[in-house]
Length: 158
Image (cartoon, rainbow, N blue to C red; front, side):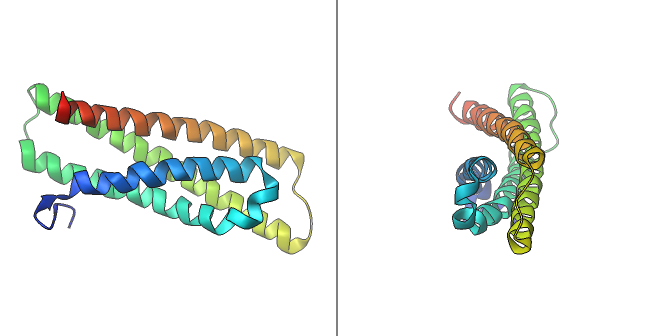
């Protein structure tokens, strides 16, 4: 399933979804956490990004695993294999951090909906904590998206 799309390796096509939706998730999650006034206008979009971003990362990893198998098989030596292994490891880290950010974002959205339904307000501790956790996770996700893409670009264009 993650091998080819219309005869073209799926990985170069699917990574574009990750490159678009994961940074949008980072931005949306940070805005949602830090700016309560806009939450009611962006809550569904942020919730959707919290699901789409991790799936985009997962599809990029699965298609990358297929492409690696197609290009070098089980070869574990050589410069190309080493570069692909590094790229693959960074992709897996990106996936896990993106999943973590998605879960935190869904929890924030769910909590905001619950507070709105109850007619109350969130505590300062929850607000500050959600901003700190979201910014830290967002920084890790952004770093790994960049590093993964950079490593992949060096494989193709280096």
